[in-house]
Image 1 (cartoon, rainbow, N blue to C red):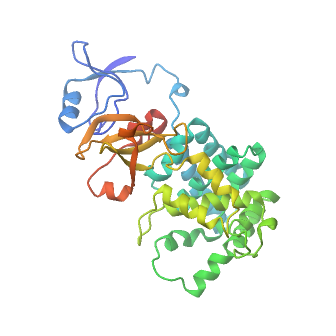
Image 2: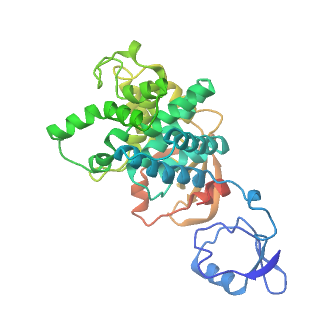
Image 3: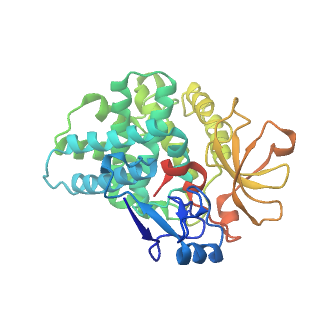
Amino acid sequence: MKIRKISPGELQVGQLLPWDVYGDGGGLLARQGQLVANRKELDSLAERGVVEDWSQALPQSRAPQSVLRLLNGAQLELQHVLQQIAAGVPFGNAQRMLEDIASLVDSAVRLSADVAVASILHSRSGVPYSVRHSVDTAVVAQLVAQAMKKPEEDIRTLTLAALTMNVGMLGEHDRLQMFAGPLGEADRRMLRSHPQTGVLLLRQAGIEHAGWLACVLAHHENEDGSGYPGGKTGAYVPESAKLVALADRYCARLARRRYRPGMTPNAALRELLLEARHTLDGLLPAVLIRELGIYPVGTCVRLANGEAGVVARKGLNATTPWVASLLGPTGAPLPQPVQRDTRSESTAIREVLALEDLERTGWRFFMEQVWGRAAAQ
């Protein structure tokens, strides 16, 4: 262990202190976990503060894991593997690489399902939407499958299918995500055939797992036979594909597009319930809502007392989660997040807020402020 000064740029306003900060005389200036609230406080700590540096004394394996780092790592690895598969370029063992990526997703969900769900709304990963969406879908599909007590082998299969479901349109997915007008005939054909194209590409990459390929092929089929590419009805669609389809549609509704903001999570869940009358297995949206709650973790809300913040964790029932208040009734940032039990009348959820509306006011927050080191970038 050594004593060192805080390096320039090592701290930012809005960050939680990663260590205790001491003055030159050894007195404690600020405790680990304290929020750096403003520039004046930041400059004071940087000028006067020293920290204990254990980086050389502790084995690297002792560092706490972060859900965001695991998911960001999964996204970066997946981007490379999908690009190779889509290009039809022979490389390594594609199945083993994808299984390793699925293990990263599994580890993230096991470490903190709350942070994994919140990351769908708040992670600032720089990978293309097509890749990020596949990982988000895998997270949600895993949670629903675990809630249904599916065998581990089945959960792994649908995770792999979610990660690779759109490889058949990888080159066009990001373009279509930002496309505001009606699709042309060529785009419609490509969209409806991408499950078949994906299966062909996966086979070409050496993947022959029947359940995995069947899930990729059927993840756009509907209960009433109106889906594609085969127009199969519910009884002929694998349950794994139904789970991936549910997660795919939920995550797609949360995503921002050039022509519309992302839906709020509760609105996305409400739409899925309506869809269940025709295109989705009617039981699955109910399982998703039971698992995520009416206000999924990460949802931006305003409370009865005027404070605004994000849902930090599930409560005792689906309608009363715990909220981390970040803004006071006047809109001013609070010095640090305040945990609110929404079962209380004064701190009940009054309304759900769109993230875009809050961001337009200049409001920003780091996930680590609310979820600690499990959400460290």
